Image (cartoon, rainbow, N blue to C red; front, top):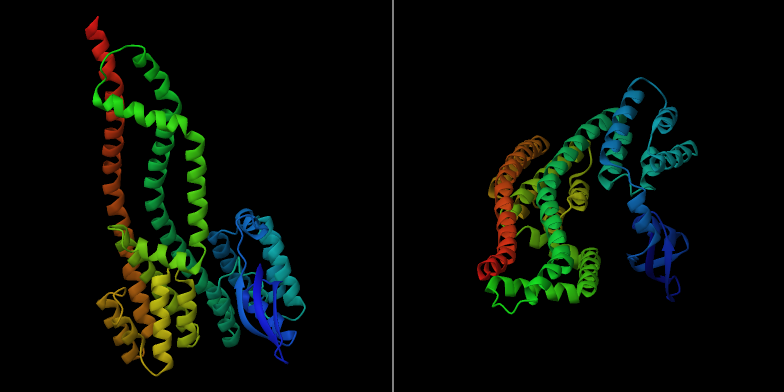
Length: 401
């Protein structure tokens, strides 16, 4: 990944340039080794960048990470040395890209790097949460136990992600498919039918006149419409990749009726589960909050969690920061306050995660049951209007004879 930086030398001379590194942290460390003081650094994003293309082609599924963690934990529990266990799994992996990356991990560990440090070189596969939990397992000497718990945790998160994505994918596919068919009909099919009506000097019904006008617009400007749609999609995608765009999109999604409740429960479940895992593994509360904020996946909740980091740093509590936010339900704040007072924050967070995980399942089933008949009604109404606009003049023509 390429990063653009501004830095100063020890003598105060300013420098600008770009550097290739696996993560931003690694880029900073590389610059510091050259005795540069980093002023600012940011990733360079490009629509047609090689890294973006490769990240789309070379993808490791979350289920593959789950299987890797489970198998690795079993091999370590059986007393097999870490490097040998990695080599066994690396040979069995079917994903060629994952196989190559694991080969690099094996090489790094064999050369003396710690397992967590070797994983850190592959941020596109192993998340910050994963790496820090492994690091905590190495420090405590219970890496096989941590990996087993981590695989169970990732499996639950994968199930939760799949449930939410499936609930959003179904209506998107149906509406998108209907939109594409409608656009093609308006641009190519309807104009052919309208030629029949234009040959007669009959007075057309209002729905047919509207259909002819709309169809003529799509037919005449079809290429421009496609280009405009493509530009809008590209623009939105690039805007979403900026910090301001990500924050705006995340905030907008949390304001959509029905969907906002599902997403709220989804992010609360993810945050609680991640924070609980980190605390149980022995990671400090401040670092656990920072990691949980980085991987929560929503800028609104990330901001709230980071406010909790600042609060804890000054001697306050997580619950106090959450109570000041409208994004966190009062029940969550109160439960966390009880957990902090009793010293059982990890158990309380696990309970919160389990509760909201079940709530997500119920909400997804409910919204799916509602969406199906609504989509059928909308699609039926659209088809009825289209058919009526075509059949009404045909009926008038037959009456004229």
